[in-house]
Amino acid sequence: MLERLRQFATGRGPVLLAWLLLATGDVFADALRDTDPTFRRATSVGLWLVWALALIVLVVPGSVALVLARTAVTAAAPATLWAVVAVDSSEDWIHLAQVAFALLAGLAVLSPLTGERFIDAASYGDERRFLLRPPLPVMVLALVPTWAVAVVGLSAGPLLLAAESWSAGAVVTAVGIPVAAIALRAMHSLARRWLVFVPAGLVIHDHLALGEPVLVRRESIRSFAPAPADPTGTDLTAQASGLALELSLDSPLAVSRPAGRRATEEIQVRGVLVTPTRPGSVMGEAARRRIPVA
Image (cartoon, rainbow, N blue to C red; front, side, top):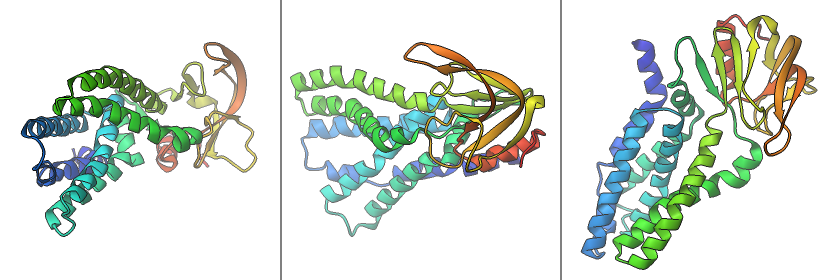
């Protein structure tokens, strides 16, 4: 029980608290006060609906919930900041507190520890899941634009409909929602890249680096340690930044690598490199499961 409480307090707890506190102010009501009554009512209902749906996915974690939570919660910070600027309330401490709550919620939901708690919530039995870092080119060039496409695609059409721009709203909604779904699916694919500790050893579940998940049995592992400057293992990091860990093996392991859009090729490896979001926690879990660590 105490362990569950600790995990909640260090994972979803801060996000949930900040998200609940965000609803205590009236910055959006003030920002919409001078707008058309129909638009104001429809937008207010939409904002409360988004807040409630985000609260649900924060309470019920998983890989899909992680993507939806990170999309919705991070959008709250720029939206709240816009509302503060719109009503020129830079001296209203309640409105400024709402901006702070939105920023805190956004930072908390993006933290590696929160991501790990969401992903590991779907584990069953004696299993523990750890997220792998996204590829650096995706992080730098694609992640923020993809998030923006999802947010705009989901919100632009309904806002136009609330403003009674029926034709434009219908077209933008019909186009925006499918485009947003594609963007969300792309982000979800990054949230399904894991290291999974199981009783038999360690599973590498990464569709970017492998054609199919591979089980590395505990008895075949020689060592598990931070990768040296000149590693000998096969690179399965998918160009991710951060500390890479090298898994050295006593015997060759057959792995399937992507070799084109739909083709794969099987190769034999004596070691692999992976880049988890929290390498220290991964090493601690490996030691707990009697995997040789250095």
